[in-house]
Image 1: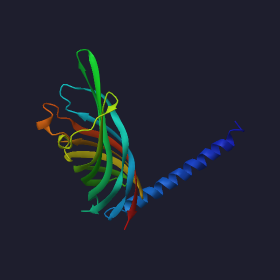
Image 2 (image 1 turned 90 degrees about the vertical axis):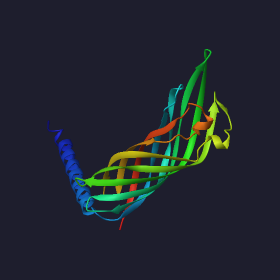
Image 3 (image 1 turned 45 degrees about the horizontal axis):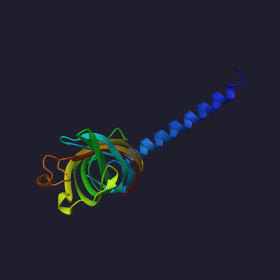
Length: 212
């Protein structure tokens, strides 16, 4: 028991330091309510597709998302959040024809412009939701592992959708998770029959904010 006393004291000291640090961050976060902010964000994008018609889902795509954002205050706790992001999307689907399984994999890179209505509450928590538009920068398609060049007019250059998410902001540092769903297909339905896939995904990002 006597030997454990230094360990117990050390744990108490560490707990006290963590409590003080959390209190400082909480107070700093509250003091930043209603201020103009801008920053950089980046993280992982877990992408997939739905509305595949007769095709089956196989697996999604793990990619990167990164860019910049602003938070323009509307009130003490509400703001408009425009962003400019690079976002990697895609997925693998499969189809069985006469007993043979075929797999197709799309890789799509977009410049994305989400616009959100952002709410802050309890000093550190964040809720946001909004719409986004995206422009296709580049693409890759592989059928059973072999790269195939798609005709340009088969792919749509733009897509539109919605998103919602939440996170924690501690002073200048934030961690956020977001779900997004495209409302339009990245393929021209007139050229792909009943195949009308839509991008969806979940992003997990960290952010650093500059407060003016």
